[in-house]
Image 1 (cartoon, rainbow, N blue to C red):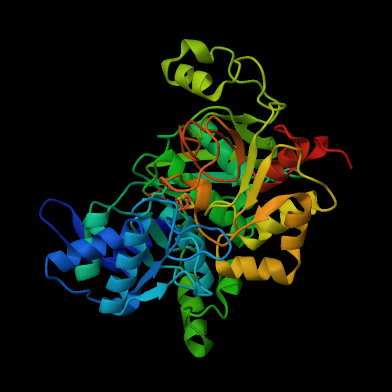
Image 2 (cartoon, rainbow, N blue to C red):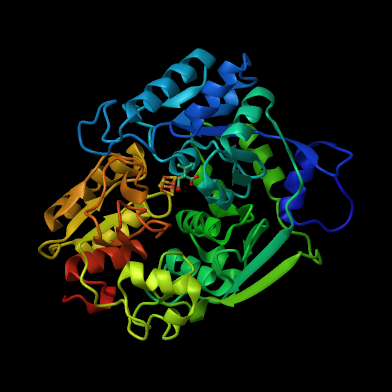
Length: 466
Ligand SMILES: CC(C)[C@H](C(=O)O)[C@@H](O)C(=O)O
Ligand code: SF4
């Protein structure tokens, strides 16, 4: 390993360095590759067409999440035209190459970034890649994880290496205490609003500080997930006892004596005192409020109740968003009537998210005319929620209760919300037509989504009647 003080990311990177090329690029070893039926299927097909084989099938995992329907009783058939072909071809390739597949009917199935931590596939100090932009979610466990393209995934399948320049390091330190009812999602939107959607361009962000240490593992995943929306190359949080405890007993995580040895090594995974980051930012958790987006980029976020920027119509990038979203500069989006509410996605669909939403929905009803849907992030999350009776809370309130998957986080030609529907959503992207043709997505925490579904308009938890 290199001498002198090192960042956490540098420590992990140098432990994986195979060689440095003349160009300065490096060849690094990859520990784990994850695939899903949308981009993973493409990588496998292309590998086969090139006549290559999978180097380490036991380090490659595939799941069905992006294209599969989430209706109860689903099959290989999907509303996405050509969708079945992706599902079938991923399944057949996985079988041919001996890759572990979390298929539609597998109790381990779910959204790739929810399933991997659940199974203990991502580990502190590891490097994991996946042809999906929200892979940095998994950096919450103190490993390096980032999204790659399908052709890079093919390269990893064949060689378990990647050729890359080491990304520069950025540290985002958040000290202080988050206020009552303020969540990791609000914190993430606060940071994106402040730093911008290119604010971390090409950097590996290390989230540090007392407010980050205080987050539980699922909240850390939400934070790292949203880092993608600042164009980062990865996001990482130094592992601690919470990380080790969360991983205990997970199928692919080390056990017994090996676990003890692993923990001893994982305890060295932190940025050394005095190390210099390419960029540093500091935030105070006490300043974060419940947030909601008003435009078509996650950076178009403001505290719930704050107005859409009064000068938005004079700014080229905001003008289109204001028109598309049908919002009024100078006025808040809070209070706007909604057509739909969505709880799901790799950002906010884990058991703690569902528990917090259910606590708000209990004994209440979704406002008339609002289509409300809850899609657990994985089949395991769904089962855990059902064991606690949370599904009954959602159903009694008037939410649909679905099978696990990406669902309407990402309209790929399958199921969608109605054209121009205004949707309050626990997802990570509010791009144009993201949840169906011309849909208007407002990003928020699961709590705000639940409260808004009850109110029938964008609302704070504190605004709904007791
Ligand atoms: C389809 C997939 C490649 C895409 C991504 O990379 O992120 C999707 O997951 C998304 O969230 O937009
Ligand atoms: S849940 Fe949404 S953001 Fe996450 S991987 Fe699926 S489509 Fe992408």
